[in-house]
Amino acid sequence: MIRATDTREQIMDRAAQLLMSRGYKGFSYRDISSHLGVKNAAVHYHFPAKTDLALALIEEYRQVLRKGSAEFMAYGGPALPQLQGFFAFTAHQCKLGRCICPFGAFSIDYAELPEPLQKATTEFMDETLKWFTQVLEVGREQKEFSFTGDAKARALSILAALQGARQMARINGIEILDTVVKQIHQDLGLDI
Amino acid sequence: MIRATDTREQIMDRAAQLLMSRGYKGFSYRDISSHLGVKNAAVHYHFPAKTDLALALIEEYRQVLRKGSAEFMAYGGPALPQLQGFFAFTAHQCKLGRCICPFGAFSIDYAELPEPLQKATTEFMDETLKWFTQVLEVGREQKEFSFTGDAKARALSILAALQGARQMARINGIEILDTVVKQIHQDLGLDI
DNA sequence: CATTATACTTACCTATAAGTAAGACAGGAA
DNA sequence: TTCCTGTCTTACTTATAGGTAAGTATAATG
Image (cartoon, rainbow over all chains, first blue to last red; front, side, top):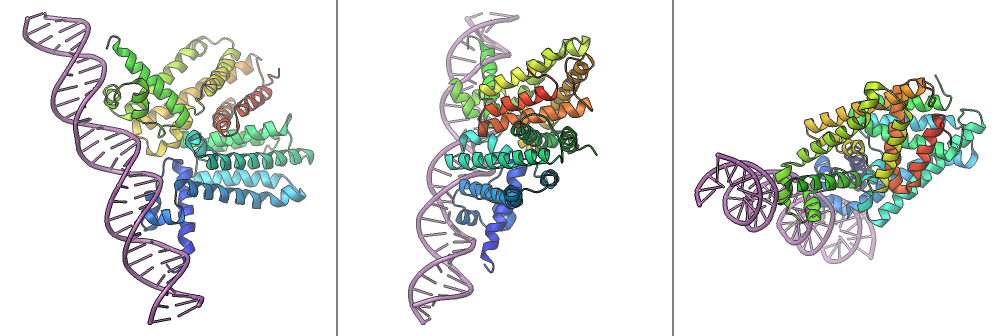
């Protein structure tokens, strides 16, 4: 009661953790409320429907992406930190048990999602792809790394590999993610 | 009643479709029974628990893999048909709405799966990876295609990319899968 | 012909999900 | 002081999930 907005943030934190560890269908409002020591209806007060919660999460992810890429997208600059930051973020999330990236989580249930959620997911992916394509293009121009062919196709392939690797890491160990990230580095001429 | 084993097969067919279009949590026995025009308990008769059904599905996938790769694994031979067959199979599945590969489906719910199912999934992935690594190694030796670095790491990366691409294809269109497959071809020196 | 196994159906159970309506209670504003 | 608003709780509802026990019909077998 003292700090009202805390609850909302805590709900979103917990929901993010659950979404990325169990998928969209894999968590319930009860999972959130019991963890926070509040009642189920308290979660519904902040997010009337689960869809609202999911939309808020996606919006948050989009904000994170925008904030992390705004300067680069507007003024350019070195592309390598963008790339490295993204890989580090991915690995860190995975080590916290958040192995399922939002796209993975929502793609599984995509067919049954309400239209606004589908739209938000698609737009988020478009934005991510646009940013990552730019990173690859600029990085190649500036000779920070190298690869052949279309940057967008390459961006898509790398994002797909990361998403797949994260999930496969759950089944056969976290080192799978490291292996794939190393492979991507090698393919970009970033051998260590 | 006339052809008893039909029902069991039909259950598995439908379950496979549902598993790969909605994920493991995303379908119920009701989805299967209503589609077949039988009662819920009929499905339980053939597969007492959902875990049993999942295990049977994985076993079936493993059989398909073994049958499709047995000759190659035992006696060698051209690797390219193995590769092409796999890509074609993946694309075909995806076009039938089966965009979520079994690894993707089970990886989402992995943490909550009973141990036998976890084990079966892990073993299936090990087998798949072993086969695909062999395909890449042999194909490189025989100059059917080319790539640098460790074959297992490359196999892992390609499998991850395919898994990710299949899921992303649901969100942003089937052409994403084609793009990634083309990229893989290019990376293996298989430009058309 | 009687028995038995197979492949179901009917009729349940328990748990959990998302969601809602109405009330409680604190703090600030009129 | 009263009223209002924001933040909850209590106490539900409805739907669906996985699962089970007991009975039924058919087909094969002794």
